[in-house]
Length: 274
Image (cartoon, rainbow, N blue to C red; front, side, top):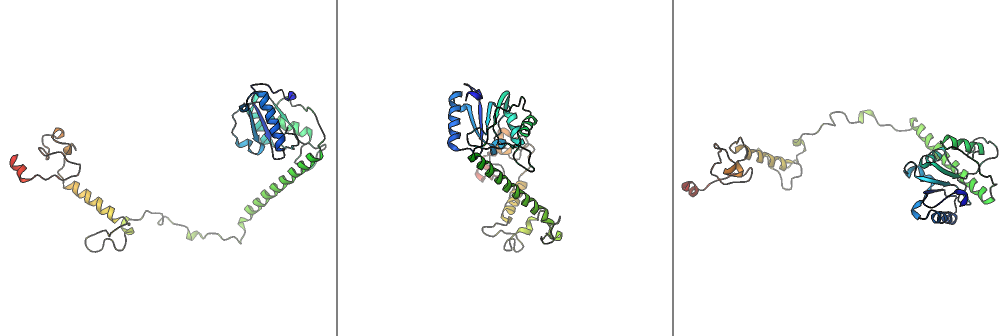
């Protein structure tokens, strides 16, 4: 760990992919937690989830990517740009990646110079190659499997694109424009048209038992409005509260308070007493 310069209190991110052996990853994280002095100071991120992890800018002093022994991590331009963003301006990124010895057509693996250029384009400065070691047979196999899987994913995307482009084929059934809803279909229907056949029969409209078509609610609303219209009109609207709130010309003067909309009838004895 001395070569990475990790010290107590620093925030460290470890980036890994599925090529990293689990035990080696755990061992590296344990050592880093011991150096930083706390488990909370070390963040472990899968490279496929790094862009979605939503780390704030300048979150880490040191980022270690692809450094788990036995891993063969390949870094895309998007991942490199994200690392540059979440790294402190004076922080350090230590990165390991398999490289080609010569430029190869359509190769996913960069050369050493291409990797340095990609790091520079990600706004990382003072890019240095610390060391270059030949891959072990296990690492060669892991890198090959990584590349083969990338090729399969690319082939799936190609097939999806071809399917999208083939949608204009004559064999594809299209919806007849005449079957699409017109403005008349989108108009809100009149409530009377929704009534059940058994509702509203005869001269007097009457809702059936357990009415669900809306006629019962409409009749109740009409009844309530009729009751309100039959009551004497008031300019203040406070008649139901009692005499203390009624004006001098209130038609409810001397009557007891009542609920809004309630019809109040006085008995003959009360009238004689008055």
